[in-house]
Length: 406
View 1 (cartoon, helix red, strand yellow):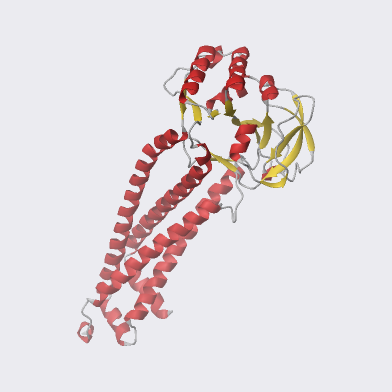
View 2: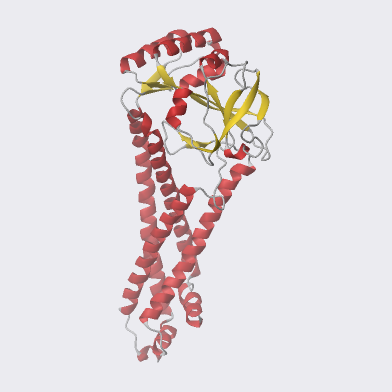
């Protein structure tokens, strides 16, 4: 322990400004590595989830970003015509998220109402922790509507419970019955950015049928078209729908298959990853060089003390253990800081009552966070191994003799 304290205080930390700079660079490298790893993991998960849409005959709508949309001119009669045309000619998946309402719950979160039709429900295949799957065969305003609730609402609204609320899109009082509870951290990845996710821990999923759509207002009609998915269709039929929407609503939509969406995403995402990885790699090279140079310079400045320790029993194998202990402590502190920042960010969504990103996890971290931390730990192990082994090799080349004590 005395030798370890000697080397850390008298040699490794002797030039503390350089050590501080190395620690800052190491934290930046760890943070970039963590962010990149987590983003890649999230993207991989998104690709797996959306892959069901990546097949022939499936087309996803989005509003043309270059068009000039005037939503004030759209009338409810026009949108109803569009949905009548859809119901008569297409099989489509519709899911509209995020109509926020105030609903009592113990976490005091705002509750998003998410509307989903049967085709979209089949695609998502939501897993439940309790209860049964949704039923779409109900009569609007005549029967209670079965709903799914997020895990965060399960205590306040358990399976089988009923509650009344003014529906945000129909503005009518509806009677909802909790049919099932979604598993914790159930989410949906974005069609156009698979690394982006919305979490449904505090959402209510309400099944949408044709009767409900006809009773809904403009907000649901227009927002439903933004990401509508045509199934078992063709490019020609997608273009026919595009013309019908433009003729009735004055909105210009694009219809792409999911592979085209993936390609668009990859064009900018891969380039961003390359830039971040290049910066991280440069930082790691600088860190390795700085750590080795600082250690060697400090040893040369303390050559007499270093020689005495060698003469009284310090071996190069013990020196290797000392270096590994030092860098192990250093990396552990940085990982602990990175963990604390991540946990605080996750907890921040709860503090800010941001129900879209509030998640459950061990110490506040979800699976992708832990996986990213393990990747950073592996990178740190490689860095530490490289620094220590190169440093020991350089130290062995330093001429050590009793003459340095004179």
